[in-house]
Amino acid sequence: MRERMDRSVSCAFTGHRPGALPWGTDERDSRCVELKARLAALLRQAYHEGSRHFICGMARGADFYFCEGVIALRRDFPDIVLEAAVPFAAQSRRWNREDQARYRELLAQCDLETLIQQLHSPNCMYRRNRYMVDHASRLIAVYNGQPGASGTLNTIQYAMRQGLQVDILEV
Image (cartoon, rainbow, N blue to C red; front, top):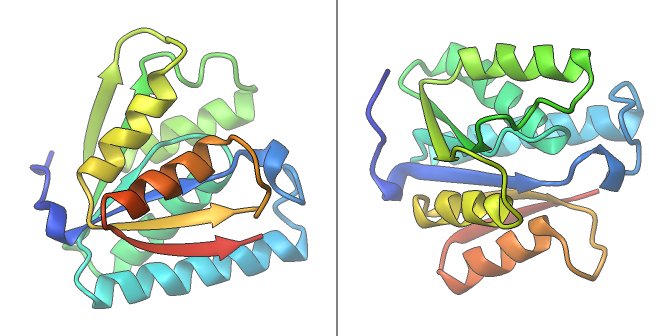
């Protein structure tokens, strides 16, 4: 395990779960394929601009894309540190088997795992999102542009209030 890195070289991520993405769970959809390519390019740009520590909330959907993108980028730049910010210990327990397996595989490839709290509570995702922003200088977001309350929008707004550089990939 590597040590957590300085906030100035840390990049966090927020994004929607499948239900809020136009393609749902169909990652073969051309819009999803295109988003993953845009995300990969933005991750590479973030690296070239100084990001070395990437923090992922490990939720289904866009978080998985981010985590996989960082793992792919790390093949070219082995000094990257990938941190999983896990909101509660049983995060994946109610997911289908395929998503649970994907989660375990991604978690195994992370350099750090930060458990925000042991048990689920109504505010554990909020606490996880705050943790990520509070430990980063940059936030990458996948956002569907829909107004109204969402963890993604709340995280973007909090990051902006905290003065982070915020890059939004709209879907």
